[in-house]
Image (cartoon, rainbow, N blue to C red):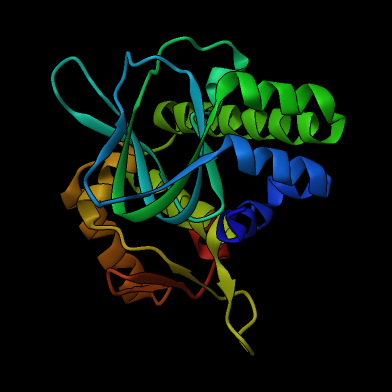
Length: 228
């Protein structure tokens, strides 16, 4: 038995509600593979027949508009699950999943995943909660597009990253650091703004002492200022 793969599975928070025998069952069903940077895992309109678990690396989830513009829906890191909307009845993918950093990914067939959900109510709840969380994020982004200016959307993005991925800085109250390799172009696509707008907002925030940014990480020095 591949103990490395079991270790990977056990370290997904969503899977920690499974019993040891169920983890072994998931291990036997999951196909683990090393996926190089820039490889596309699926395109829109591909069959939605699998769920993916990301152990290492980064994956970009995006959509392409009719006029060819890319909108990034999410940048996922280790411990995240994606392709989960296939569980809620989605038959065709509506987005593109592309590896942006060399990744280790486990792939589970949708019918196997659903069987695990049926056998374990706690696991069913965790998966349902994940789907609800993702849908809420999409709804919030749509509301931001309607009700917030481009500057406010960039600030909201930084704040969201601080709350979801931020690590507290020892001895510094209200300060966090987010380890996330994103270009201004990436952030623009995540916030439906322009690269020039992101550059301008980041520059202003740095001058104000609200953040510090070096392309590999964002230091958030004043979270309250981002809410204004």
